[in-house]
Length: 508
Image (cartoon, rainbow, N blue to C red; front, top):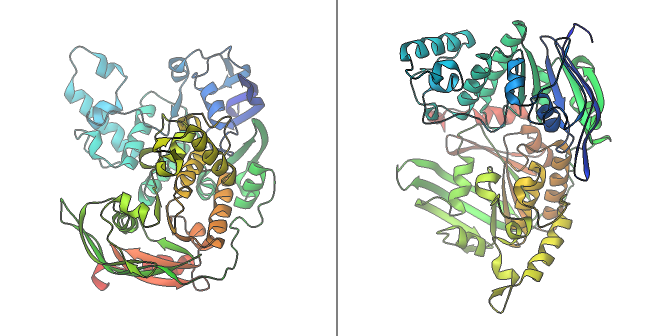
């Protein structure tokens, strides 16, 4: 039990009915370091952190937890917080209608008093905001902040409880690049002040940027713990999946067909604000082509394709031509009938019904394909779901399982199954691998390539430049609602894409 360590978890084993989630995991974190915990979904990362934070109480697992040299036995979250361990979940535990100051001290004595001293509350909140370096008015409602700023308020809230071990679970999953940079600056400041951070992320570029040490879990076991200097993205991936992914982006040259989609001089104005979301967009897509759309946050990529899909009401100008015919798409039903499918960037909000099972989610957009004499045929529903589950390599103990019980990667496979059942001619994928582990990403890339080989036209919207460069045949770059350039696969580089993505609107 070394005094160099803020935390040691020794031989932790945690079982659920029929599943050993953790199998003798050992995990040690030095004081004042940022220690990344990596692994595919289902590797045991979240379970291990729930053991540490008291979500799974002492007695529900075996093994020892040692904090600052002393063995601890947490029976609930409160006890872990009293030991200065704070877990910040991906889903924030904040109240949007309350002020920033009230959220910072949500469970503190300052908010529990019968008469809350507002001046003291604001002064204390301002003090913490100043310490972290955030220029935010503590009086405004939390809901007026971006998700990224809300994430930072959650961190401050943990620090007010004198947290010495801070656990961050996928902290940048909903952050813009600028908010992520602010987060990294704060973590570096906390590290310099001796705070220990456990950083869980699928984004290996972030891990390599911010972490001092990386521990990899696989199948509920500790695979390795290494200093960051000895690691690369490829080495971490190999440890996570148990094999070398020499071709992480499984691109294949293909013979492309004729144009399947042409968009000409397309402009869209939102019906409420009358704001011009996209302006004078023209592009084409061939059968079997993977067309990447790149750009910075707010470039208009998502707005362009939601409006083309009929998801936004508003004024459209220009032409949409599918298979040589001009089409009028008024709503999503029209789009599906015309052979378009759209995988949303927010699968939980727009892609799935979380408290429905896999079968019902799979058939949701194609009920006409699972009917018999105008009635839903449950046997046919099951058959189609089984076929698609096999096609996308879905991992679930039963197709009757609710989708909210699945990992992010398997949830995304259910969304893909739903749209594949519509037999799309054009498949629009908006951030298709966001929040998904590397193994599931690789499987989705292989599925995209296979669909392209079958003649489906693929539009890939992604903020991950390696992804865009890795599997696209051609790349279109947008900025401020306009197309700023088009690059062939041979000419596309991160530098060229960023040059086009940062073009000023006045020179477009």
